[in-house]
Image (cartoon, rainbow, N blue to C red; front, side):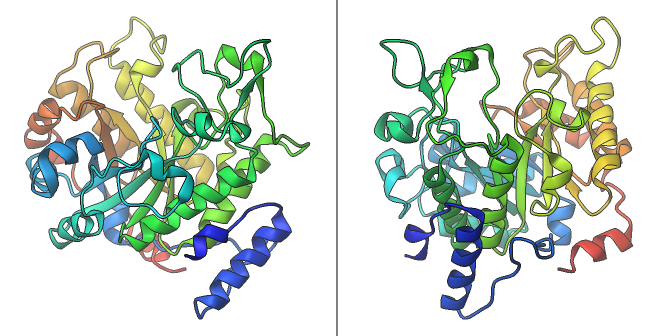
Length: 382
């Protein structure tokens, strides 16, 4: 398959490879390195998407019918499915050699699953975790972040306890590009990249990046996003830290330069969980509302109206002052007021009873979010 030799080495190599791929497929390269931004139109369904994250364990247990039922019960019109998760597991039959040892098959016939959901008017998003990986670093240690301390080998995050692939390494970029191409081939409406960043916990003081050069971190990640966007013709989305929405530049060293990413990314999903920012306005009321509003409002001002902003909202109890339907309602209300286009809910255990009740009661009066017709039309034009 073409993706088995799609290797990202330098900007020049990447542009040449993209051109060769397109010629072999009977087309032309969509842009060169210094050309116009690459744009993949986001359908109106994608612009208005509201959905749930349903990991592969849910699909394994409940199948396509269960996924569809959960989406419909919660009055959603979109779903995020794991293709490659943060454990390093791959849940479909992949032709990418280095991930085949981590295949679970939990999505079953992934192409049929996607088709069935789309036939029922569900917008289907394929999530690919890029650099956090609990399995692959042990199999390809030369592509992993290393630990500089004596008697240690692969670096482990102090925050998650997991291992990471080196974001500098060209073979890790090639793998992500190949997985994105497979997502498109399976029929997904959109690719969503997660962990598109460098680790930033305190343990990074002992981290060494084997493939590191003088290239700045934001440029490293831009190079990956450019390669993915050149390789696929469906919208590209990214999950980003909530703080990345609120802060300009890259003060934490994540490597996330969101304004620059608009050249290659159509959909931005800031993870605005009050659980992740427990000191935010501590002691004050409606903290989750104020966090979501601040994040969306700030990011909209930074990115403009052409970018689709679809946040991940908190659908789990940890860190919530009161976990009830009002908590869900206030987050959605804040997303609407901040001018988000839609929203997603995250619960790692896929338990959405509170969301279901909120969507049937208060939240339904907030839908659909108002998106100007001119904005919808402009996003439909490449």
